[in-house]
Image 1 (cartoon, rainbow, N blue to C red):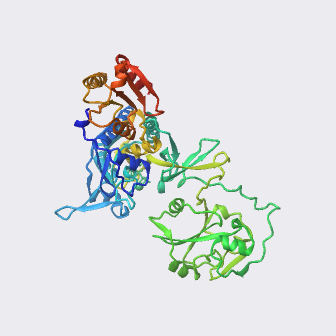
Image 2: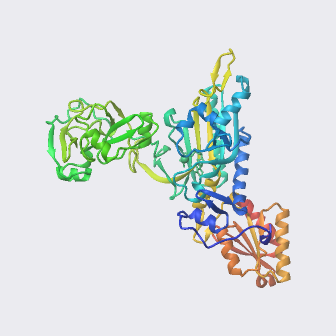
Image 3: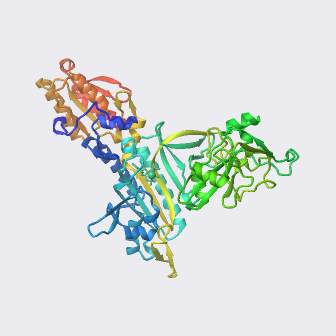
Length: 574
Ligand code: ATP
Ligand code: MG
């Protein structure tokens, strides 16, 4: 490809909202351009990288036994009503109406459409298992589209769906897909980890996410420094302290329950200082509002609740911290003074494991400016359940080996999930077994963000000059840059090298622009071609061209006739 015949315009203008480096660099390098919030043109240079990733994805999925198809972006509401998601899916679902006033949506995901297809064709266990995938445009009306392709509203996703005759077969495919994902991200030369993820109401650890390690990632990853436990923070299990033996002699005698004045002492720290106790001796009571009513959660004063764990336990559609008015209504006190003792009948009380062993603790007294001390479970208050609801923090013990957990950030690029019969049951996607009995098909689903993976690759591979592409994702592998395009010797040598590279199957771009060397070098660094061949009149007079690598910046003077072989060597080494 010749630069002047291509569509490639680098720019210095970066929109103010480009907060992360991948977003800035993709715009500056002329890979994407914003059309509307979260909606982008993939310009030819950007599209080449996306296409390379898609080729890798397709190659590995075919190895894993997946079959490609393509489903519509616009989906009828009837299918979503059947699965129950038409009413449940929130505002991320872009609902549209056709000229006959019929409801449709722009697909954020395709479980309904694929399940509808498979139930139509597949009737017998003999036709199973099946694993179908597509690479296609999704629309999710994200509340905060940002970071460019990382969190768009319209974006490309590879989504696969598997159908099975039994759970053992689902387990097998799930593992095969996990391995395929590992091969895909390895082939992209990305630094990634596979972590246990939240699987919502379905439960179990049948969901994993693939995280590209990056400080700008929106996900928090919890990893054990000693064993291979890794989970995202939403899912990470907490084990705070070993349960105290209830009968143990060390257990302090229960003190009398007291009601003490704590004027204006609202935060845990305030109360701890005021009453001269440590924050961990305080039981904090948080009031949540949910679609199933008010819930109070008791947790150690110095710790936070994991809303995802709480939502899963309560099996609610939504939850949020109750506002000032609701807290007042429920507890009779302003925010900051709620407590488990004498809490109203119409509010459920759940206890986090972190306070199960607490004795003689301090908590809010459900009145303004008042706290209880000497509080004991059983005698003074009893949660209806004890559950692990804790948000895991850096340094907490590992749930597997007890050593320290470490928190870091990652970009979720892939997500694999065992769905069970969540869709096949309501949508009656059934098969008959050997005996002729009918069953709903257990299903798996497997997502991978195409644009997000490219953005993540840039987050992980750049410097202050621009992108440093991993070779497999680079839009072009080699840039051939003549410095004086009007010097016939320079131009013909550069052109010859370029043509030979093309003949050898190398993906090369020929910078035939009549620009100053400084401009060419700047653009080359910004776009991040892994290899660059510079043909300049001075070195050519000595029979040399200059070959340099973007990563590491290593430069070599190479004899003209050796240039192509040299580049081919460098490309095979990677
Ligand atoms: P997130 O928590 O980041 O919103 P998600 O859990 O909603 O992601 P899935 O429904 O599992 O994502 O989608 C599968 C994959 O699609 C994700 O792993 C991610 O790579 C990609 N993806 C999801 N939402 C977006 C988006 N708004 N923009 C770009 N890629 C996305
Ligand atoms: Mg999402």
